[in-house]
Image (cartoon, rainbow, N blue to C red; front, side):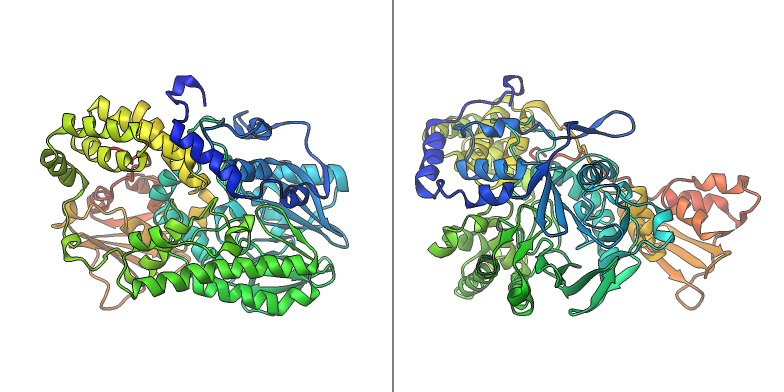
Length: 633
C-alpha cells in the first residue's frame, strides 16, 4: 500500500507473531505449489481486461508483488495462499477438461465434447469470461460453446455468462444447466438485501484498497472480484435429483444435489468417462464460510458434511481427479478421498463441538475463543481459515441454532451503538481518558482491545480526529496479522475509511438481467422492502394493474405495508386507480425505469381513476443507500 493512504509499518508484536507462523506450519511442503501449476498451458499477453469503455475490470499483473518474500505486514500463511491463487492462465485438469484460473475470483472450467465445449461457471462478469474463453480457444481451437452449467447460485459462478453465449445461442438449442431452485436464490440474494451485501462486500474483498504488502493481497478463496458487466441467462435444464444423468455434446454427467451447503442451490458433477469429479464450491483449499462477512443466510455444516460423505460414497471409487470452481485440483484416488474426508471432518467438527459447548451454556463468543481444530486437521493447508474462519464460523453455528440472543437478560435490551458509546465514554472518564489508556494498550500490543474500546469514542464523538486515527492504526495492525483474507480486507478497509472517509461501493451484483429474472411476485416483494413504514402509516392506496397478457395484479399500501395480490377475491380492495398494460411495461414501472406520470403519454396504456394516487404510492418508497457508514455512526 502506498504511504499516501496513511498505512503504517507493522508493530513489533505483529511482526513477531507473523514470523512465528513461519515456524509453526510446514512452509517447505510444496505439494500445493506443484498442483497449482500442474497442467499450465499459457496465459494471455494482454494483462488488463477492459470493458467497452476502456475501464479496467481485471488486472492479471496486479499481484505480481506476491513473488517477493512475505513482509512483516502480512500473515505468511495468507501470503502463501494468495500467491497460489494469483497464478493465472489456462490449465489442463485431465483429458478434455481445462480450467481458466486467476481471471476472476472464481475458476471457469471447460469440458470438451464431440463438437464444442461445455462451460462450467462462467466467472463473475462478461469481460473476464470472454477473455478466459478467448485464452482457451487460442490453445484448443475455435470450438463453439455447446452447453453452459451453473454449479450454484452465487454471482461469481454465473454473472459472466454473456461473455460465452448469447440469448440467441440458448434459443437455438445451447442448454443451460443449473440445480433446482437456482434462479429463485440467484435473484433473491442479490436483490432483497443486495444493497447492504454489496456495501459489506466492498469491505470483504477490499475493493477500495491499493494492492500491495500493506493493502489488499487476496481474499483466500481467490484474489478479489472483477468489476465488469454482470448478467444472467436463465437455466433451460433443471437438475432435480441426485443420480440424474445428462449428456450434452457427448459429455456424460452424473449429478449430486447439495442444497443448503455452500449455497442454497448447489450441485456436484461426476464425469464417469473421465474419472473426474467437480466439487463446485463444496470442497476447496480453505475453510469456507458458514456465514459470510458480507451477510447471507447461515449455511448448515451438518448437511455440508453429510453431502461430502455422500460424494465419497458415490464417486470416490471412480474418481482420479477432483477439481472445484476455486483453487486448484487434487490428483490421485487416495489423495482425493483424503482431501474430501478432511473437508468433511472440518465442517462436522465445527458443528458438533459448537453444539456440545452451547449445550454446556457457553455463548457464541466464548465458544469461538475456545474452539481449536484437531492437530491432524490443522496441519492440512486446505483446512486453514483463509476465507471462512473457525471464529466466525463457530458464531454462525451458534446463530443458526440459537439466534442473536445469548440468553443473558442484560443483553436483551441494550442501547444501540451510539447511545451505548456515549454512556461508556462518560463512565470511563471521557474521551481524553479513554484515548490515553488506549494509547498505552496500543503500545502494549493489545490491538484487539484498542479496536474494541476506541470504537466507543468514535461512535460517541465521530468527529474526534485522534480517536479515528488511533482506531485506524489498531485495525491496520489486526489486518496485518490476520490469516483470513476477508478479515484482513475488513480491517484495512475500515482503517482506510476512518482516515479518508467513506469510499463507497465500487461493485453491485444487481443488474438488469437479475431484475428481469425476478418473478412479478419477487419484484413486488423487492418493492415492499423499500416502503418507508413510519412515513406511510396513514396511507391507504390501492392500484390495480390489468395485464393484457396475464392475470391482474393489485398493490395495496396500508398500515405501512405493501401487499400484492393476483387475480380477484377478498384480498383485493377496490382500486383508486387502474392501469391496463403489458407485463413488460409493468415491470419497467415497478423497477423505476418508467415514472408513473409517463403512463398517460402512451396510446397502448389505459389509465382510469386517480393517477395522483399512483404517484403518491411511489412517493412512499425510499431509495437504499449503497454507501452507508460502517466504521462510523
